[in-house]
Image (cartoon, rainbow, N blue to C red):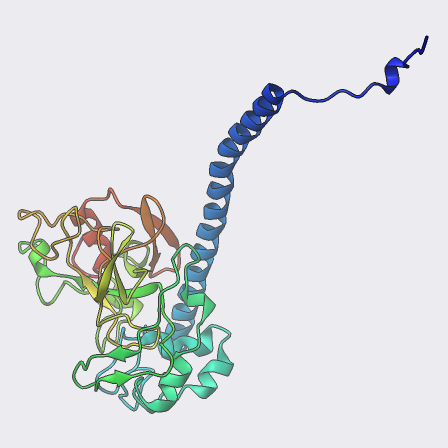
Length: 312
């Protein structure tokens, strides 16, 4: 009689047992993935916030060197832009962002659409990008916007997710805002000093997220074959905007609170505050601090933070 050593026997899983193990593993993975994705988004938020903080430091250094903040864009000679070239605030702040090598190639004596500056403007600056934002396909054909001619680009302009808020539209509250008090710190050809920010530098937004441009988004979804003529690149001097307010679905803009344009954040990205974070967007204030602004904030409460001298 042949005796078989029990220790030498081979045991195999049954099909049912394998299916149970696979189901358990699948359940664990399904539970783990949201946590991993949340951790990644938290890291992206931190990087986005740090980028905006670097932007804030550059603005404060510019103000320290020039006794005024840069304009959002220039159409005539001004502080930091004596030649009066059409330039973005980002272009003149490169030297304060540890980007002196880029600034050395960027000619502030020429408009941003000059051949040389278009070449420099095609180089992506990581500080201007929020990692939560999707990659945007370069736009190679840009229609004219006086005095800028139409542009046919060999390389698309590098984009930015951070933009100066120039102020608010008086139509948001005609009883409060007018052409003299509707402005924030940085607007067209401005020469704003700290003393001009009478609402308080810690209460006044200067730059915020306006991500995804020049593509057009509504609530995280891109509209096919639609492009924004502003915000086409970090070097674009026409990309700053004023707060209009939009409808909840993002279809209407600037129609007034009573007519349904009561949303301030994340409804539409064409020249409105917008991010790809859940629940709101980051904003940089004149004193250099960063705050996450909830998309549930009322339009009038948000507007109060977008003016420097409206007694809000």
